[in-house]
Image 1 (spheres, one colour):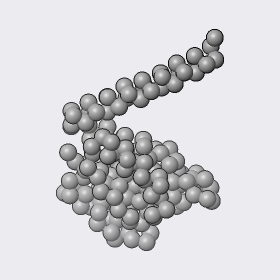
Image 2 (tube, rainbow, N blue to C red):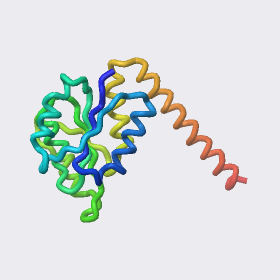
Image 3 (tube, one colour):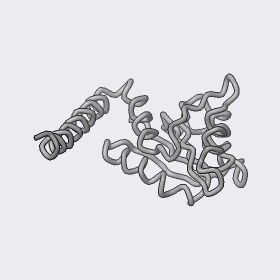
Length: 164
């Protein structure tokens, strides 16, 4: 199975990124996590993304806040799918990061999830990898069924409490 690369611009993004890591672990998806900044370590970020395909990666998740150029910088150096996680900051509640991540020029796509949407970034990565991995596809289907059952259990509890 191909790996998912998870790159964060700063360790301040780790509480968000940890949710993606936990989701990948729960699905048995191999991954690597690194801290590379589009601004402070641009050479390392570029080298990682240029070599990602040859190093066994199938998807890259890039998490950054504020200016949030990381996902675009990664995408500029690879043809692998890149998923951006805009991270909330104290300044503009993540709107700045969202706009920086989603407003990519034509020709350099970055799939973008919600502000702090690490779980969905991991699940989207899994869906991409599952296109060529039937076992992973089955795990995703099972997760959807389990999530549905959990939601219906909550509905039943609410109905039992209020619908008398």
